Image (cartoon, rainbow, N blue to C red; front, side, top):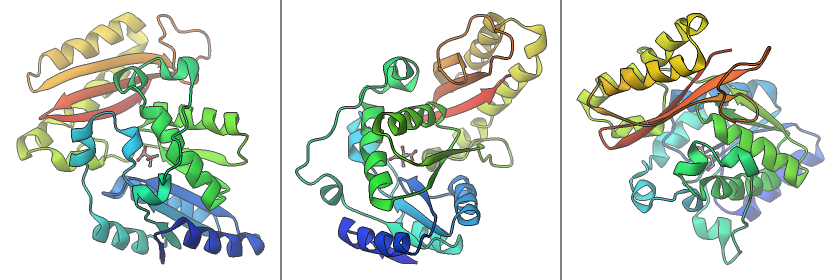
Amino acid sequence: MKICRTVEELLSNVNTLKQSNKTIGLVPTMGALHNGHASLFVRARKENDVFISSVFVNPVQFNNKEDFEKYPRTEENDIRLLEENGCDIVFIPTAEEVYGNEEIEEFHFGELEQVMEGIQRPGHFSGVANIVSRLFIWTMADRAYFGEKDYQQIAIIKDMVRQKGFNIEIVPCPIYRDEDGLATSSRNMRLSEDARKIAPKIHQILLNSFRQKDNLSINQIQAYVEDEFKKIKEFELEYFCIVDDTTLQPVKQRQINQGIVGCIAVWLDGVRLIDIQRYW
Ligand code: PAF
């Protein structure tokens, strides 16, 4: 596996690959890699001639300085996991290398960012679009893989691709869960032992609401989930939104054939966890 730390090195490798018509699959990451990432690596490896990943804790997508500073950095382990998963090139730049003296572009995503993470984390998605658009250009990837836990992020990235006219396929990948149902996340490392035992309840509550979906109205599903979280004092529910799976706008009553997803953000032990449940 080649480790590129500069854009120049990355571009020179990518140019050679493109000259021999290789297809490139990209998995952008912020490191602290776990089995959830590995499930994306497996797909990128299988579906492309070349598999490129990036490890970069992107400062411009954090609206909370403490969250940025506390974000786990585990480069040695990350390199090992990428090697084990057949990665060809990993790009590990510094912030200086990525942004230098360049202006940070301001992206706008209309309604798509006026809900959920977009409200709670102002500027977050513009920051994501800044790094992801650069990675798409530098890696010339044919496909890019993203986990569905960050459901809104996928919609935003698809819109960024449309805005920029990039020729790349965005591949959403199912959430990878630990055996007890907790969605894998780099943030799980920050949970205390006790909090880690409680965390799987997020998925359990959502799953229970899914099982009752045919007997409940959307409002009742909403109330059920909110009530269940109130019963567990360790949780602080930030939002639970039941939304159209494409527009991400809140749904009060389901239309025929409409895809619907519940998206949640919960605080536990000072750690912010997100998850989703598809209902229809
Ligand atoms: O989902 C993430 O880990 C990040 O938002 C991403 C896509 C790697 C951009 O920094």
